[in-house]
Image 1 (cartoon, rainbow, N blue to C red):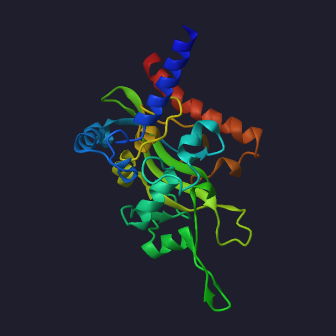
Image 2: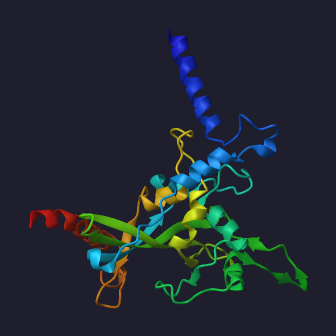
Image 3: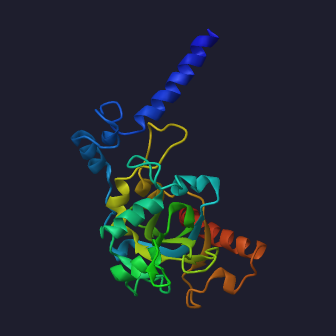
Length: 281
């Protein structure tokens, strides 16, 4: 009996790992692993949910918040791993690898300098390439360019709006922008982190919907990067909100550490309590 239980458990784990890699059972050679058939492609297309059109008159209350997703936290590992970009060709990618490949191929073009988080300072393709790649010339000889890898990305900043939709009668969240935070390859030691660039999130949703997040509990049941981000399946903390003081950051009026953490939690509680307060009036 014990042998059967052990065998069944191992069999389930093996199957979960197999089915998590698209087309692995039908591949005639390893190069076909990860290639979806027409039914799978159509299924993925049908499961994509466009952002609803929201009339400004239907927004009873709103608050724009800026959050940081620390990739050192275990809950955020699906956005970080795999950190070796050469290990997997198609079926497993980090969020940074997905973004970088589509930026280089010019599928992602709505990029903005980090100095303006209101998407008012667009970057050209060459501007972005200077952030991702470092081309060095030593003694007149061009060296192999250094490129930002998944292992170099330490966090993501996101900008989004919480709003109360009076038509639906509920609190909702709309993700507006995402910014990778990683190694500054222009530094001599490369140890300093820097905000890379803002990406207008609605413009990349369909791209992220095509890429699946690895599920270490059941790899046969995976969601897309877009589903993970839109449904807020990550850990984050608020570092700024829109306010009368020119959208100042929490660090500008609270000491780093406990005071900043408590202020972040206060803002979060104020947002989450608004819906409950609406029904108690």
